[in-house]
Length: 391
Ligand code: SF4
Image 1 (cartoon, rainbow, N blue to C red):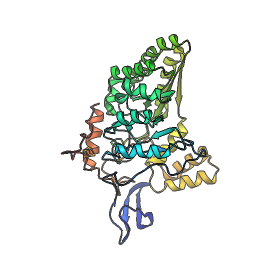
Image 2 (cartoon, rainbow, N blue to C red):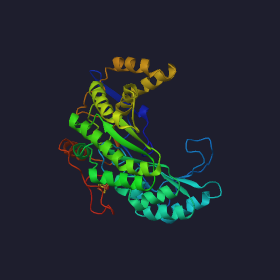
Image 3 (cartoon, helix red, strand yellow):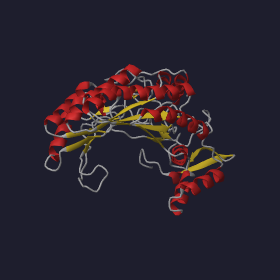
Image 4 (tube, helix red, strand yellow):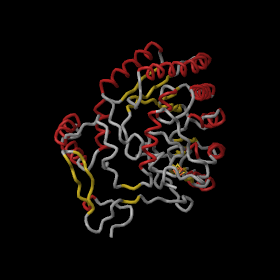
């Protein structure tokens, strides 16, 4: 019998009806669903960089993994669903791993969906900084950016940090279940500015379900308000800083409450980007970065695709990465409409992967998204919670 957790595509027959994916049929000896295998206790399983070399994106920086999974159910993100429950590596081990790398480097990266949710995050950063390390977290939630944490990160050598409200209005932050208030976002901006950071990155999303022009207008005002927090500090320091707004279109991901959503129409998204650009351009020191629609479409084709997505990869590879030719040809050949919602009653191309999440939970979260309701995170000790089906 196949090993648990191992998906062997050849062990399954794909069915299609009128060009649409209609499910996988296991061949004899193969299980109906492939059960995700996951480590319950991370303590006996150290995960950190084994090789340090300048020939990587992070150069000689050793990477430590404080946590796995994420307690926050942001509805666009796989980590808060399919990679749960949240689990943490012991503080002493993380410090020991950093210490072991000390002869080679003074920088250390903390890689996790939400490093700030490690129960000893403040202590971890403080002790790494005291040991003389520059600490570089993969991301930090706005509610973890306290003045103390920001001060430590800046003292350790960070010159730029990121704020990720993702939704530009209270309404959209409810839709995606990222329930920061504007006051929290601005307090975090103030903490960054007061700590002497001159460059800040702001992550926002566009093309979300339930999004309206009013949400886009609110996003413009939010960026302007963040800039207002920085201006006095830039003036006092005698040099202008910069705010880079990274605006990403939602690409619905498998095993999230948005998995049934279609990609928002590119014309709508383009109009909203243009409206935001018009609001931000006169401000100065603010840059707006967006992804080209082709990149978004390729990501959507691969995220939502069934096994026929392999043909797209092959076609693009054979055509030297010319997605502009490969993608339209593949969409036409497979009859795929990236913008069409998926049928909640039909099998999905990823339904055979059993993450532990139960579909009614995802459907309930999708419903709460339409009502713009923020959902609660996992309880700290995970005790007594069975709501998503994993624990
Ligand atoms: S069952 Fe509850 S605690 Fe466990 S991962 Fe799901 S939401 Fe989090």
